[in-house]
Length: 378
Figure 1 (spheres, rainbow, N blue to C red):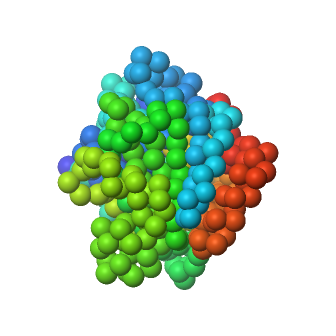
Figure 2 (figure 1 turned 135 degrees about the vertical axis):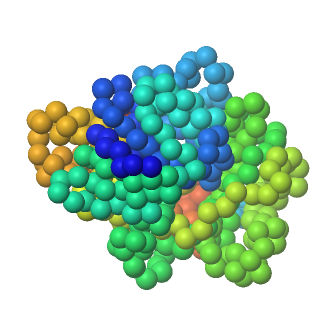
């Protein structure tokens, strides 16, 4: 394939990448998006979206109002020893699988004129003479602007030796996540967060009366369980009585769980060699905050506004990059800090039990904590 030139090249077709692509194509720009998988596909994700994203998703063309999705207004948190706390979610959210949502957005992107190369891996990305040169498994391309939307960890992160890759393992790195779709008697308006030793497990409803069950834990928990997910679930997760009941009575709809490893919550740069980073590639919020999907889409909106200004010759590349970093930090840096602080409460069982008991005794503490990890409609 001969080299093709585009206005914008997007590496990664998740929520940040697809939302940026749709906005950019609707504005008349030539957009190419690279996705290493083929739509639709499952991915590790909690599949709860804060209502702050509702209007934005509808503006992209997603017909949320007519999809009869579960509306989630309550939060339950259990400690490893079975103490249960429940609290209303001030803003609330809704449940939808990434399998369904990403496919909808990919279709909208194609209809808007985006060139989507599926099952395509970007092996190299270089900035030369004010242009990006991309080498992929589907040919070579160039673009005026490049966006990195490739998730928690990619081959480009390793190639660029990004800071979080080269850092030694610490309390914010080397996590694993496991996800299932299940059928289980669970209130449709409630998202539950069940804690266990060195981890926590979330469950909430999605479409078609299914639930998403997704948990995060340390790689050490798995290694201590002979690298067996089933053994880890039995011997560690199910010490929490709510998780024991769930794993005993739920109908698991996958033949095997979807997993991801080497997850890091360490700080990341929002611009790498002139590439604008979005979604988990820019910074990963702890899943217990339930807001990563909204943050990814919000970042796509913020990036589009600045890219549009640059491509319209209303600002320089340097100004675009500096302003993107500034607005990203303003919107999300505080949420990530709060998420890391809250997650530190859910490591050792004693601290987890004490934290949940304290919030149950003093429920007025819950609302500000939830508010610190969420934003407003955008």
